[in-house]
Amino acid sequence: MPSGGEDLFPGFEALWMEAAWGKAFARVGGPADAPPLLLLHGFPQSHALWHRVAPDLARDHRVICLDLPGYGWSSAPPSDSGHEPYAKRRVGAEIVALMERIGHVRFALAGHDRGARVAYRLALDHPGRVSKLALLDVVPTAVQWARIEAAPGMNPHWPFLAEPAPNPETAIGRDPDGYFRRLIAGWTAGKDLSAFDPRALDLYAQAWGVPERIHAMCEDYRAGAGPDRAADEADIAAGRTLAMPALVLASTRYLDHEKPETALAAWRRTLAPDAVGAAIESGHFLAEENPSATLAALRPFLAGEAPPKA
Image (cartoon, rainbow, N blue to C red):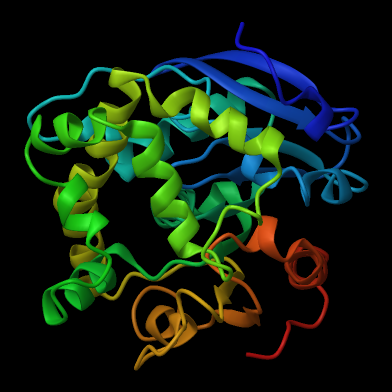
């Protein structure tokens, strides 16, 4: 078993599970009979993303911090020409089956970045499974691609990572640690790595130099350009929307910084017309850069209290 991370999640257990994609790893904590809350991380991170908020949430939730396929310590499944093993529809269905296997048929769900894309697709496709949905620092995939096409050069890692294999894999492989460190530093409010706990950063870096994990992350983005975007566009055209309460948290220094449309507005005009939202003074990594404000927005939402003001 890979080492590290235990001290980031005091009182949490390390849980290895059999998933459709292979081995799945999670940190699990909180009362066994408390309402379940699944937390899904983003790129290029792992379950460790949640270490500054999960212990607090575990006071009254059964918190499951899962490594997505290809990330952290979960298996990286082989892909195919359609990138389907990394399509959010398929990953979401596999997570539903995994959660049911460990005893959670219905659960609250929060996701950041790529994890939020899995989360909202799961919630759209399996609405009866999700009691509440929180989306951290994303707009719908179809909206993001439209923004990139309208403003070439914005978020250049999206089209780069979605290029056909092995172009991005080869380029990243020349200096993977440098590539990922430069990337995430540029997304923080301070434009450096000081926002990250060194122990969490070490865990992220464990995966950055592994060729099959670099490939998995690229496949994640290729799926975003293909089946994920197509699924969004089909749902938007059909008028399908999220059925459960939805919370949109957006960073002031990254996602909503100098944008013509806020993240909340983008969700309300597409897949979540009834969403509520809050702005978090932060760069992209809300739960690590500003955990107190992130918790202040998440906690009342999960408790069913009055929503935060947009």
